Length: 87
Image 1 (cartoon, helix red, strand yellow):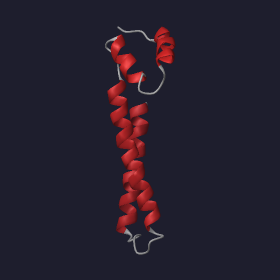
Image 2 (image 1 turned 30 degrees about the horizontal axis):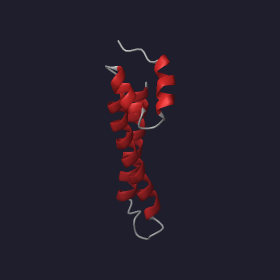
Image 3 (image 1 turned 90 degrees about the vertical axis):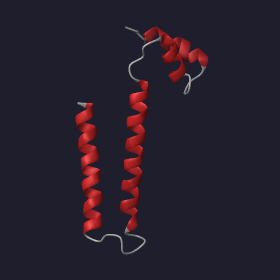
Image 4 (image 1 turned 135 degrees about the horizontal axis):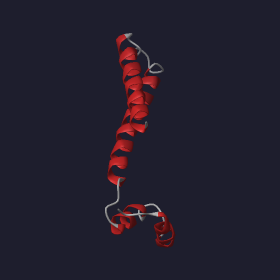
């Protein structure tokens, strides 16, 4: 389901960007705002995909500690380990 929604979002953003370019919505500085925001959205989308691929699934508890340790303290990582199941 998540992949379907991500694909729909990407397709919608790409279609909107293409439409803006085809109708010539780039003549003035103020008209560049939607195009710039769409470009930022597409970059954010690609960053999000890279992060999701990096995080799944954990093959070892050390991998979990390394990944989650980027964002929270060591005490919090130890607390969160209780909820992780490595198969």
